Amino acid sequence: QQQVKQSPQSLIVQKGGISIINCAYENTAFDYFPWYQQFPGKGPALLIAIRPDVSEKKEGRFTISFNKSAKQFSLHIMDSQPGDSATYFCAASGRTSYDKVIFGPGTSLSVIP
Amino acid sequence: DTGVSQDPRHKITKRGQNVTFRCDPISEHNRLYWYRQTLGQGPEFLTYFQNEAQLEKSRLLSDRFSAERPKGSFSTLEIQRTEQGDSAMYLCASSFGTIEAETQYFGPGTRLLVL
Image (cartoon, rainbow over all chains, first blue to last red; front, side):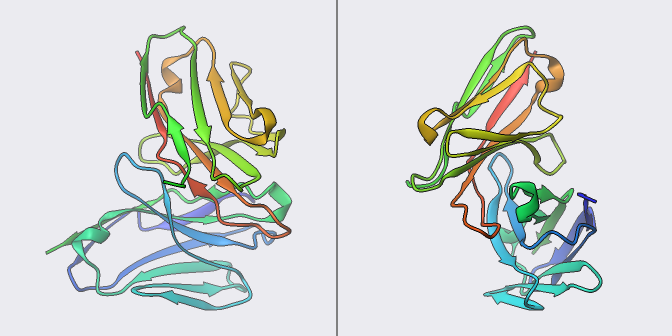
């Protein structure tokens, strides 16, 4: 019930392309869904987050699509750049678990020129 | 820099030694979390503080691990009698808790290597 599933495990995209990462969750008590970006040797940094009362949130080149009935959400990175190459974690948290963040296993994104 | 800070950034120790890590959260944040991240995995929750009270501990946190947050400010994580399996990145995060789940801001982590 606490697990967050994420796919693909790794992704290679050409510069200018669209990167898509998909996640799914089981626990309906989750009410906050952040995406974190992590570069090697660094801590995770919040990229964008969504609550289940909206179906989409866009910030610059990054968009989260959220499907509450399917318990799925995805990250779209438009016009992908080499600087976007990093590991991306979807995550979920909720008030019933002291807000501890449950992370997906991560997607390693490589954007090639 | 007003973000979460952690010290040291790297620690190499021999098996059986004790180590202590420090985390300084964002100053107005009342919630503090410790996570552990092994190579190729997402961070895993270890423990959580609301002000100075430790409210939850993961089963990952064996009795060799202890965490404190005196006065509800900085926190320390101590590992006694370290084992090679303790080698990981230890991450600290903080948030300002209200009635909703709020964004957690992560520090740069302390990378521990147990030889």
